[in-house]
Length: 267
Image 1 (cartoon, rainbow, N blue to C red):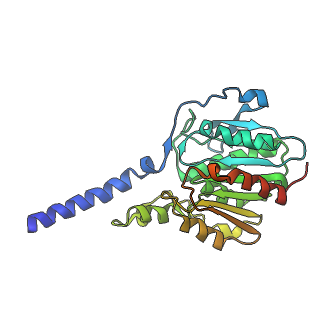
Image 2: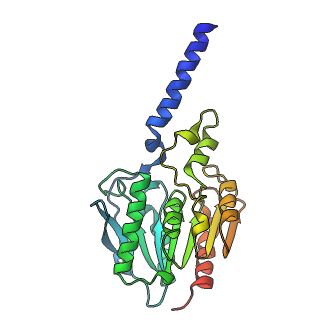
Image 3: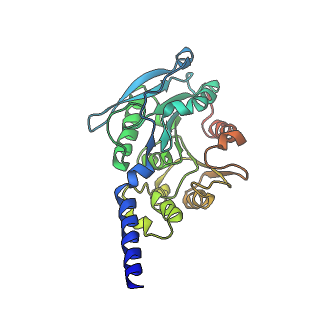
């Protein structure tokens, strides 16, 4: 019995240690290849460079909008790269919106390694680029998809913006990690926490939360908790059949456009 117990303790310690040491490999799933425009340039989309405060040059995509129309700064989730979100860019382009598909360090052929502090620096570089393009803060929409919602909330808590949209957002990576690994102290192990719950109350702009009730990656209770903690004005849209990555299939982007038109409109 004692040798068996000792083996179990060693195995558990190895599991906990492995989760701690390799947590970033579990959290960040980048496609490191350079995304191709594949004809998007015909719509006016162009490759741009975001320069971060720690000296990185990050390839991103930018579509200037029609005069007076809102501009969306889009921060995608933990997988793939901006090229995987081309259909979303096309949808927003049809509305005349400007769109900056901001790419992170370590993704899409960009230098650097993903991290929470690095992603925040990448987000600030995105806002700096849009400021240089003359985008007024009250015309700016921050859109955070899944893990990118942590970037969007952190930026929105510190900057004047026109609106904040959060798709399938976790309250924090630590809480979601504990949900998926209930047999270890996962929340204590997480270093890149993206704690949106502690920041959402500082946002001074209309907020829209989108979530699928069948989401198994970030269960809907986290999106609801974030919405409950958010200040007014706020709206929630919850799709009963949607999971984590298919909200657009159930009409989420139409909801997004209607929200932007109500809150910013014009042009």
